[in-house]
Length: 170
Image (tube, rainbow, N blue to C red; front, side):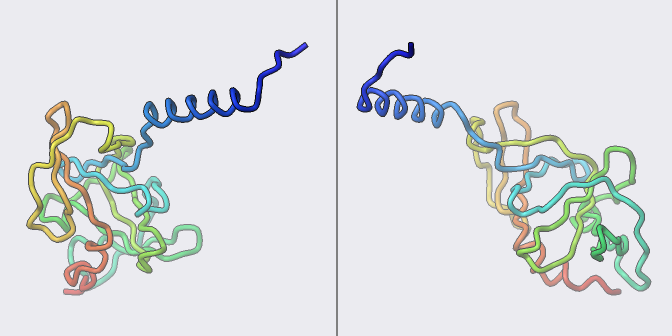
């Protein structure tokens, strides 16, 4: 027969276990990506999907960082080389490159091409220190984590609304 426990004792035990779980578990809130020779953090809520790049069609008279337009599940997305847009070398597509689909709440069908993903990260679980505020409008913060790795935090809203991002024509 099962052991009988009073409701009060059960609630106290449950409360203790929930508090322990909250202090031990920190959810990853960002995706680490490699952009050129830099490490960037992208908030998971700002992207809808991470996919391997497929074919895209080049757009004539577009800036070099606008690689083209891709049909992804029946929707057209502009494919942006995030490294080239940021003033670095262009991404060479390979087995590790990925497209980050910008979340639909930004009302911009854009896919950001990055060199590779570095896994899920949580800025709360590392003993990081904010090093500076960026002079680039779409970089919200800079961090150094506990391994002394430098990270840039992407502000997706600022990026997709920036005039330079919206004016892709030559």
